[in-house]
Image (cartoon, helix red, strand yellow):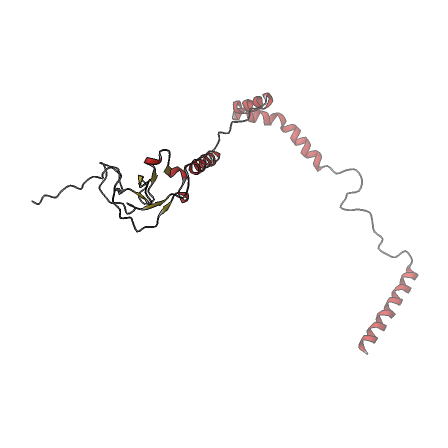
Amino acid sequence: MAITAAMPAAKERHRTRRKRASTLPALKLSKLPPSNIDLRNPLKAVLVCTDCDTWVLITGIYSKVQKLVPHHTGQADVAAALHCRSSNRRVEWDMTIPEWRRALTDAVKEASSRTATTVLPKAFSPQTDRTLRARAERTPAGRVADWNAVQVQVSDTDAARKELPDGERPADGPQLPLKPQNVEAHDRRQAELGKQYAARKASSAA
């Protein structure tokens, strides 16, 4: 039976003197979230790798080129030794430590402003409190008894709404005359209108 070697575990991230840099584009500190950078100790500056999301040391602080140290993708001595492609990736130090501190403070203030605050319930007035307590204590039998107590008044009110006022009903209204008061004047007016209509019809036909 063949014996295979166990997968080596990830090693601790440490500084290296390797000069070869990664071909990936350089990481700019100003483009990273301030919370993903720690510059409190510039000689041991670290940031979160954008590929494996782990904290990685920045080497070459005193040299012209700063890089991420070679590292594995998992936790040291626990995960498998998988090489991260951002090892030896160049870092552009395009912000000062005071600028980073101000950016971190602004980010913390913005995050705290988005935190939901606890809404305290509004205190009830004594009258409202008594009303709510009375509603909570009422039983179905009590509701039926309350309705029976006011049912007579409700019935009387409904009957009063159906009663009509004294006098003529609104739907009938006053009687309208069916014949003209002056029959002769009415006939003359109708004759004049007939002549005007005949004249307009003859002119339109011509």
